[in-house]
Length: 379
Image (cartoon, rainbow, N blue to C red; front, side):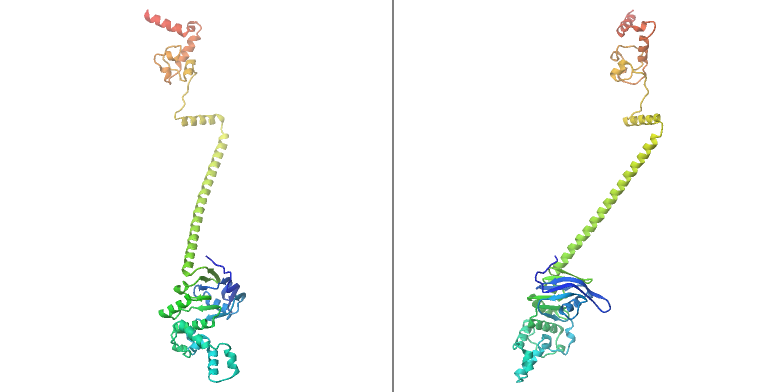
C-alpha cells in the first residue's frame, strides 16, 4: 500500500519541471523518500533521470521545492564515457590524494594543507571501500579507459561509500555490468544502510528495495514494498477495477430491464384506462351482457334461460322437469328428475295452473290428488 514517511530524507513539494521547448517532465509532484532504499521505476522517457537531477540540485525546478536532509551523492549514468578519468577521480578523492602525496614528498605549500584538511587517511579509506566492493586489485591511478564497465560503476559506488553522503542517487547502476559485477553490486546494495534512491529496470535490484516509486505521466506514486509487492498491489487494484466495471454493467442492465418493465406496465395501464373510458360511453345493457358472458366464461359453462321457479324446485336449488305429474314435493317424484337439474319448468307451471283453475278441481292438496290417482288405478 502507499506509504508516508514520518522522517523523510527527501521531500518534494508541488515540484514541476519543464524543458525550454515546453515539454513537461515532472508535473506537480508531492512525495517523500524515507531513510531506506527506494527503487524509482517508470517507462523510458518518463523523467526518472530528470527527477534525480532535480533532487541532486543539478537542475532548478520550474515550480515547487526540493528539501533534503543532509548531503547528496549521485552516481551518474554514463561514467564509462570519461575514459581519461582515473580511479581516484571516480572515487572522488583526486584533489585530496594529490595534496597528500605532495605533502608526503616534502611540499609545504599551505594550499595542500587546506585541500587535505583532516582527511589524512583518505587513501586508506579509498582502498578499504574498493576492497569491500570487490575491486582490491585496482590502483588509484588507473584510468577509466582501462576498466570494464562493471569496474567503472563499482568504483564510483566505492567513492560514494567513502564520502558517506546522507542521500545517495543511483541512475541505472547495473547497465554495462556482467553477471559477477551485478552480484557484487547486489551485495553492496543489500548491505546498504542509509537513504538510497535507485533508478533501474533491473527487477532483481528493485526487489532489494524497501520502497517502490513509479513516475508516470509526470506524477509520482510511492509504495511501501519492493517491486514484486508493488506489482501484486497493482494487480489487485486492476482486478478490483475490473470487478467494479462488471458490477456497474450488471447494475445498468438490471436498471434497464426494470425501466422496460415499468414502461410496459404503465403502457398496459394506460391501455386499460382507455378501454374503460370507451366502455363507459357504450349502452349499459351491452356492458351488462358482456359482464354476464365474462362471468359465465370464467365459471366454465354458458348460462341457460330459465322460467319462473317453483317452490319445491327452489328449495332444492334445482330447476324443475316436465315429468307430467304433480307432486307434493320434489322428493316424491318417482323419476327423481327434479334432483338432477335441467329440463323445462312445465310441471311447475302445470302445478300452478291446476291449483289456480276456476273449476276448483285443481284446488286439491297434493296429498288428496295422490289418493285419487291410486284409487283410479285400483278401479
